[in-house]
Amino acid sequence: MGAISDSRIIQLCTYQNMIDPFLRYQVSKIMSPVFANNRRVISYGLSSFGYDMRLANQFKLFTNRYPGVIDPKDFNSLEYYEFESDDPIVIPPNAFALARSVEYFRIPTNVVGIVLGKSTYARCGLVANITALEPGWEGHLTLELSNTAPLPLKVYPNEGIAQAIFFEGEQCLTSYADKHGKYQGQTGITLPKV
Image 1 (cartoon, rainbow, N blue to C red):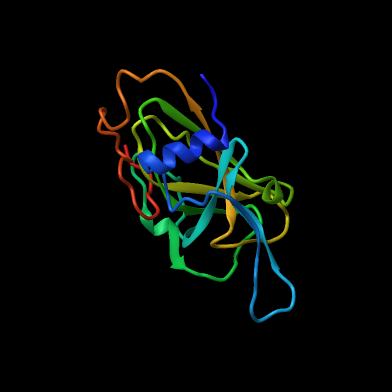
Image 2: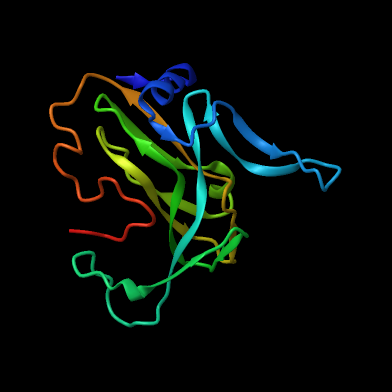
């Protein structure tokens, strides 16, 4: 099993619709009809050995309005303030937010994806904790974003947030879909389930 290159990712997206929407190139600036200069963005799209996904405009920002303990088996959805924004949002210092990818993934049963945060954000103190993209899983990826910096941190919707690196191997015996995984087909931001 090895990491797959851009040419193989293009094949999987063309013939198996692995990533939707899929960009066959990497965007790092946007041409602006209003401004004389191009607007730089945090890159997204196809890279040499991966795909840089974008941050959607839906967020759930963790609050401390309710004292107690966060319990993944008995999760209180009131712990989050939910909102949408096409403008940059600010994550307070030492705070946590949930978001989702713009892209919808359909992982083939002989592929697994590992997702890592983008270095631009990591160098500012943002930790993007994302679980593996299991063989047979499909859905929008829920992103866990933690600001470890001592200052507020901006994140930009519709720009790059994390990179998926894909590995291809033999067909698995039991896929995520076969197990009827609890996060199968998720859309929007999905809270913890047991």
